Image (cartoon, rainbow, N blue to C red; front, side):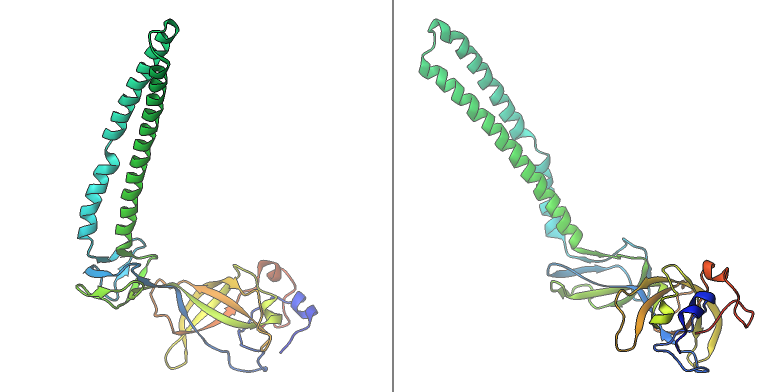
Amino acid sequence: MRRTSLMLMSLPVLVAIAAVAQPAGAEPMDWPTRPSDMRQLSFTRPGRIAEVLVEEGDTVEAGAVLVRQDDRLEREELKILKVQAEDMTRITFAEAALEKAALDLEIARGLAPGNNVTPYELREAELEHKLKQASLEIARIEQRQAIADYEQMLIRLDQMQLAAPVHGRVERIYMRQGEASDALEKVIVVVQTDPLWVDLPVAMSEAAALKLGQQAQVQFVNETGAVDDTKAAGKVVYMASVADAGSGTLTIRVEIPNPGRRPAGGHVRVTFEPRPEQAAEKSSPTGDGKSSL
């Protein structure tokens, strides 16, 4: 049921979540939780699975390698590229050749005033010096290219293994050792269930009293539909920018700590604690400082 603006301003708020405004005395509604993160991991290139390092249900840290493709050929190529990237021979040779050409040009210019070199010989020395300058620059460019090829191979090798993007659990493994995976084919799924998320459609009048970071009290509902004794302190982490015009609701996302690793998909009942500025206002007629919407 709707409240007037005056009541919203004067009373601290404890919001009983409902998809739409519920009639007085209606039973509170329960909402399913979901993982705060779920990643379906795939390789960007086709290849053969060389190793699966985890099993379904394993807890993994962010960055831990989970699956590797067969990368033996790439690693051998990497050795060659590393040698080429570190090779300074061509640059050293080009620097020496340029130094000699500079010396020859200096001598030719010194002899020119006494007509001890012909104009052709002087011009030839100048051009040779330019050629050696260009040769040195080419050698430097080739080395930069070799370094880029080496770094590119490092990236390719990194893409041939799948690492956990978040701290979580391995939910599903679709490919096993020896199987061939196509590009972008689903290989493994990692989920993060600590924290959990629950998305709630809150009536616009009630959502106006909420803000990001606001505390929420969460009660877990068991399989019989009864409220569990366990409670958790959640908080608002997202408020939609666009309301649902049909139901007059706004999606509010509550984050729920889940150190006990309850499975996602279970149901919860959520109420919101009054904000500090609301708690400082006049208490409700019930005397508990809260009001249920």
